[in-house]
Image (cartoon, rainbow, N blue to C red; front, side, top):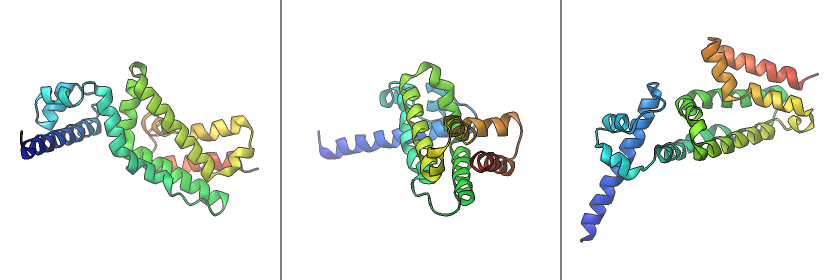
Amino acid sequence: MSASKVDGRQQRSERSRQQIIDAMIQLMNKGIYIPTAQQVANEADISIRTVFRLFSEMDKLFLEIDEVLRPSYESYFDAQDTSGSLEDRIMRAVEARVSCYLEIRALFVATRSLLWRSEILTETYQNNQKRLRQNLINMLPELKAVKAETLETVDAVTSFEFLERLQLNQGLCEKACRRLVYNLVLDLLTP
């Protein structure tokens, strides 16, 4: 078999892989958080056989999507400015959390929906939670000196779960969510 045939097959395979990932993200953004392989194939305009050939399990597809989106959502936390007043750092931490949540909300909801049945996604989710918590401590080193319940409360009120509750369950707009979370953290960390 010639190198060009192998190269062509590999290129088609990579194109199909990207079509599947893009289709899955589009479906999640439409509110279909746990799409079937057939729905993904239809959205990608490829055969279901191709979906299963490239992703033998849907968990693997979710993991690949996480890998694709990770640089985007980690950018909110990687290069955070840790200087300035407590108020400034709280504002930057809250801004990063809310902005990231809004960007990856569909992936977050989809992942949360599947935790009950997937050890791989549960492990990835828990690792992401640990990274978010460590970022919070890096941004707000004052958390190292507070009572354990204060740290837990700050972590909880800056969590994606809390933001989701504020937006979906309580109907708060993005601006109100940012202000509320900022004020809660400020109240918890200032005498």
